[in-house]
Length: 629
Image 1: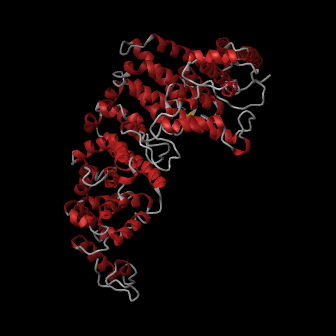
Image 2: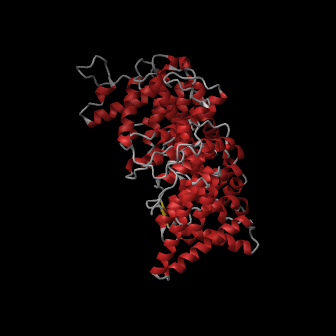
Image 3: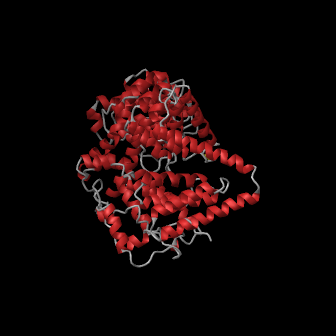
């Protein structure tokens, strides 16, 4: 890394960092230009030092054109090729880091500026990045290569250069499917086999085994999400959809959610949304029942991207070629959202859903599609409720008050039946109260739907509980913020073994509890309720990013996991049934002390669940949402 300029205080002749302090702009420019031209051909020790400095500069100032104009892209591409072709040089000193830093620098400078991306393509970075994407080195270099290629693919001017390398799409698809297993088996699983330079890159040399493991999860998530982002760029072009819509790949997309939080990528659901936006993609998606089930579950969850799942279902219903394939599952799900006002950027979402359902019914009348009896009954019920709302607008206030009072009386009858442990009878009363309650009385209807959801839980009817809890959450103001309905839906998803959906609802429930003034829900001394903490811990294990890979590779315990063998089933003594929602309240609905008969009934329904008397009693402490007099 020799240069002409030498700082009098620097012991290294020609130091790059001294040149960066050069006050004369023309001399500085000439020296940097020379540095970028000569660096790939040099074999001096210490080359990684200026490269790491350039890496820091690229991250801190990705829009600065100075190095772009002086040939940094040509230099980085040449260094990647050197590492690939000259393994002796790569293994010398700290040169092993250089291909990683070089690809990262390319990705940082092409992240925001299309003109920089164009310059990089002309500099020949794509072939070098493709070699890293192939796995010529390790998964660490694959991570930064797919990141850089993803940035290049987002621009209209540089996408053709990316797509001209036909293997990029298929390599990205394979990487999206295998990324988690690759990182788990090549880094996470065996502590003593971890490459030292991987550990240093992940933690900057500051972390121990536990931090390395946590960072590996984060980087594995990024590797998968960035692969999906790159594929998503291809998915906007119809000519690439046949390649993307391979069944093996499609069926795995709903599960590619990249961990608990990843605000920078919509993950698999975002790619599915892009695919469903085009008719060429809707056919293959509709032919995979598991995908439709997953879309329905994501739509009725606290996932940040639930609106994307709703979009997919709407587009599939609007397409006469796919409508009949998805109707039986999509219609019940979308009807639960018929009264929602807005969701994210979607305004008047409920009205849009109703319009789509109306078109489905009209199409069935013309013979274009076939509507099942169950779906038609649900849609007819929805239309009746909309008509009921119109009638109420012209109804006298006194008559509305009478209807509201009648609904309250029936609800209280349901509460009494619930306390007497006649759960089926209570559910019927709540249904009757819903039919009486004015449509505009949204707060009261939230209560009724949430109470009926609790009945469905105790009757071991999780799908019905999810539906009612979702309707309550859609009616609530603000939307998706009714704590008890979140908790009930979390338990219902737990009954179905859907860990991610249960986890997200449980976390949202905890967030709502922390802000609630309800004595049934408010947290004592800012502590997370024990019952919620247990469910979250359980679902965190079940939804663990490396779970499938760990099961496949033996689930080896890693240091720093506090005795938890990640990837193995936990002791079922921690399993909580839907009826074990031990939420503390003020005693207004608490059952008596003798619960032995009720405990035996629950155990007969679900013998593999182990419930203590304490958990059983707490299971009814949440009981009804509100019991107004």
